[in-house]
Image 1 (cartoon, rainbow, N blue to C red):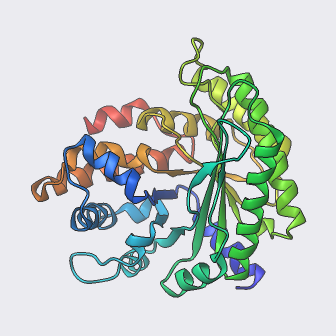
Image 2 (cartoon, rainbow, N blue to C red; image 1 turned 135 degrees about the vertical axis):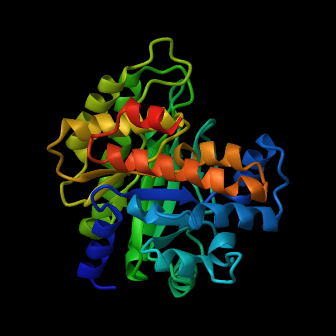
Image 3 (tube, helix red, strand yellow; image 1 turned 180 degrees about the vertical axis):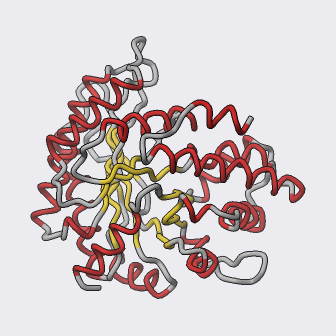
Length: 340
């Protein structure tokens, strides 16, 4: 795919009022989420759940792309159409998670590095043939006593850059996801420090690997207080500090920033996105690539029952609509009350 085509796809993924659904849970992750609603994680149940989400009427108004897992991109909807075809006919671009997950970084207790570069070129070409238009690779950076180390940050940044370069070679827009985890008791200031250091390393490596910045998207964490921090930052503080951090290190050439929700509640993730867009004047589009913050309310309503599908789809549509409004800084609590 030529540079202008990569840029066109990247910009379409961050179209005004739209964002990305991350439905790329691994088999282990989806098993845990199904267990919480007492549903067995069988291939058929996973297919039915994704079918419920993907066939929700009207989500294309607010969802530009959906990140799929390997099993899902090969699966079919109830009507027999492959899921990439279902999405494409709604004007939603299919994407694919291509990393193999984080593993312990040898010699660095408490730190991880993401694997999956071996054989990636072949996998990317196969996924392109299956209909994928973009891909995602996640790295995780923990904050704790003496961490993150420079070694961990640089190892993950290097892997992200190699992945991104291979994606563009295969004609796929790479979503680069360096996630500084919110686990721990650290302050928002500590999170800002770790996030800035991580993003500096990531963009240095991306440029070293000749990644076309106009043809990629960044999926970072928001700058947040740790979950166990006694002083939780307010919504305006999170918005201001996150945007300040990004302005220091993210080049304006990047078309968009698609935030992960990172364990936040559905409403809080929307609140934070809304507050950042309400600030206005950003050099990039500020959007979302949420998993739990879009899915969890619908998942709890679905409960694995076909009779619950219409209600679950209504809830999923509402969450997508709320985040679509947050893309303009126009989300309000009245929107939640209207749906109650």
